Image (cartoon, rainbow, N blue to C red; front, side, top):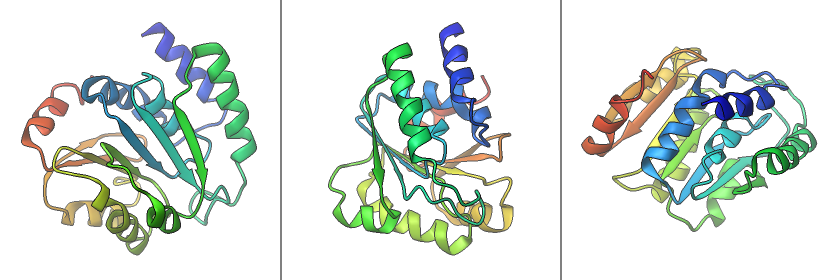
Length: 196
């Protein structure tokens, strides 16, 4: 736990609305041992780097690295690359690939099954719906889909999350992380550590 906390401290050289979900994300990866994790919306890299920490499977962080009206307009790619080099040297985390692309364009050429999908792009209802519809075809019944900002954007992300059919949980705080799976077994397992 001490090493995980040190790792998170390193990530927080850039503040993140995702910071309260870091340890949960690591536990999720350690528990389900996914082969492929896709993180739609990198910003400063906090969520992507947390998914990568356990060194299980491959993590793909997809972003156009231009920001938006909700996150702010900024190019974070150089900072993210520099932080990744630091994490490789200090923690040995080396299973992450960043893809500079619009989400919809990246989906057109994607060809891998996704075990954990995290949706954290623009937070309008239409954008979240579009991201979900473009990427859900790469998931299956066992996949886990995460939606950031279900609490901070209740009228858009929150509404879309509520409309979805499946087993659902919310990891509270840090703008709220909605968790969706079609697998009752996976749902029951996540329930055992969601409040740790």
